[in-house]
Image 1: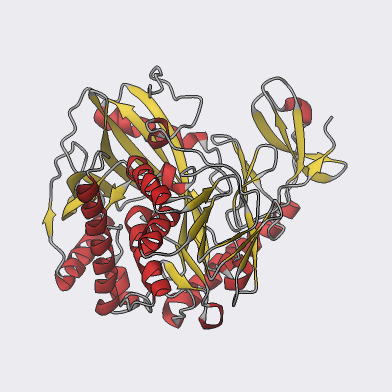
Image 2 (image 1 turned 90 degrees about the horizontal axis):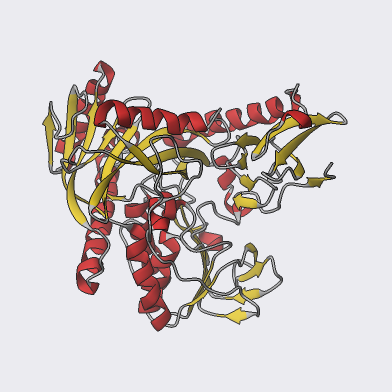
Length: 512
């Protein structure tokens, strides 16, 4: 496909490089009732690999996607296949113990090697390459953190080097290198698996929204269109578990948005993948494109719905790319949403002992490429009755007072604060002041109202009360979405659900 050519200014659209450079197959909507062994909800990397592995085990599998395949976090990642997940290992040792930290590393290492093995066996052309991964800092506090992380690496036997310079030309006080990690084009990899899944008999349906599961002992997936999928097991790979109430995930998952720009520069890329430990964080890697290289510059994380002027985050990344790498052209920009658990370990496995036929995989904390592959393998082992030493560590119903109580109180206090704040805040804006292709909050007959004006002038008025738990959504101009600052639900400019936990659209008001 042709890339998006732009001048040196920021592109007016948001478009993922991954989605723009691969042909993704499309599938029909579910139009009848089904009966299968396993029903999988979610057409991203977790759902696709899970479906592939379970079908290989001989299970009859169907995969349901509420929208289009690979259009969620998987299609908007930075696609690093690595066990270096920021400053995680020292924290896991302190919060749990070295055994848990080591298991987390081994889990990711096994997932990485599985991805490499599949690529080599099937000869998948997906821009796969081996790269060293670097954590770097330019601050005194960051140096202290890197030393702690280095000591954790040494304790866990992780292959590493502690260095004072990196191959890329950026200011660095110190860096920690994890050797022999990977990167790839995730959608080229996954579209090949989709081909194999069809030959294995997996039934795939797009534009089919699951809205609930009846009877967790004998699961029946209910869809928005009124059809049912009877199955023995349900796998929720929908990013945010859609049976939220059963697992209480709204109180246990912290949603964040982050941003990526793809830029052209005359500088040759020196290799490697980079992530800073300072604030604001910066992520750097490169991708081959036609006869050149694009640099991916990411970062600017913030809690969903609380990012202020979201265009400013893209501008900050572009300014960084121009300052350090003489970026000449911005070709793509996109954003993604990620979920973090209370203890920073993902939730993978059955909801509980009493709801063992419903399994979830979520909370990958921005490292979903590696963790999703590991999660799919773990879920397949659980469903197949095979022993897997990681099951207890990632169990969704785990509870560790030291790791959970403080984080639980902080996150939910923030959500409660946002609930009250949204109800109380006023607005001096008026409908007349809202320009085309933008939105704003106004008061209509005393009620907080979201107004979006299309390019042609058509107005859309919506109730800004999130249909999940009643918080007030805020406008995200960069993505043209309404985002909830409490639990991360996202809605289109006209109110349709884009991301859970909300299941119902924002209420429409009379247009004027």
